[in-house]
Image (cartoon, rainbow, N blue to C red):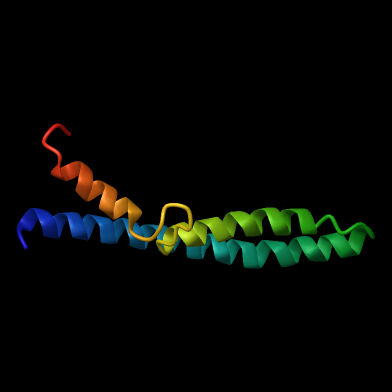
Amino acid sequence: MNTTSNELRYRLAKERVERIKGFYGNLMAYCLVIPALAYVNYSTTNFPWVLFPMVGWGFGLLMHGLDAFGYNPILGKGWEERKIRELMSKDSF
């Protein structure tokens, strides 16, 4: 492999690590905030409003995790890398 290829692989790996790190930060915040909201909810009212942030944030967390770990059910695994290689191979790009 040449140096440019190694630099590209390093940059892509570093970006992936940053996305995973961001996901874990988001997961940790979710695990701390949702129980606190549940405590406030059940201490103050009978209506389970805590379900709304739990489901909404949980869906966002799921999407963040899928992106961070490279799983994209719509475009398929490795789509981004294949598209980058395709665009880089074109002379007109």
